Length: 240
Image (cartoon, rainbow, N blue to C red; front, top):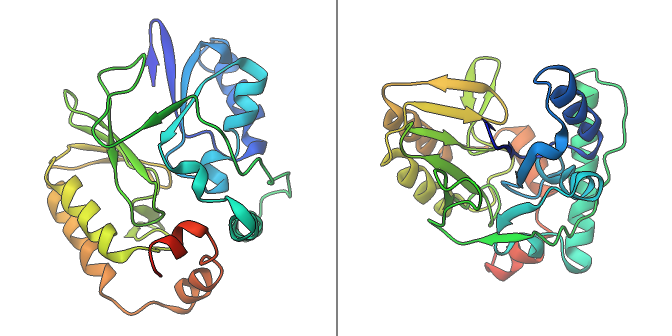
């Protein structure tokens, strides 16, 4: 998000996306990457958190995330989950016929700013943080009330024209609560990490349809991803 006095980065992509962020800033918007004042990490999966530490190291860009974010990949279970998530990210890249690139990143990112629910962003106080667990325990969404705009990370994924649940949904009851929370805001613009921009006059019906998907039987892909996603200590801490 561009402002005259700086930029807000909504997730950092994979570690191999740092060069793409660099090129985009310099070639398309004619600004140095150091103009990014804050890099948000919506959750710790490789395609959202992978580039954060590298951007901070290269340009001094501070990282902001939910307060418990570094628990996700902590310990032996977290280390295993980190490697499995990177393996799955490589599989997605392969399925999309992308070149093989570096995917491993630091599993503990030590954010410069830690958020709780409903806090506002430093440097960008027109944005609020909403804690929306379900996909992981630490997912956050960003809300711009004046513009009725949400950045939802992986809360909904658009795939071949269909609105789908993220893979996996580790905490379905909490995900249902998160969808209720977002529906109550009635946004008119939804920015998705996977699916671009969705302009809507009835966001509540969209989030309701996602809730309905939670009750549907999982397909084979969902079951496979779920089996590979249960090793974070945060999952065990929730009694699952």
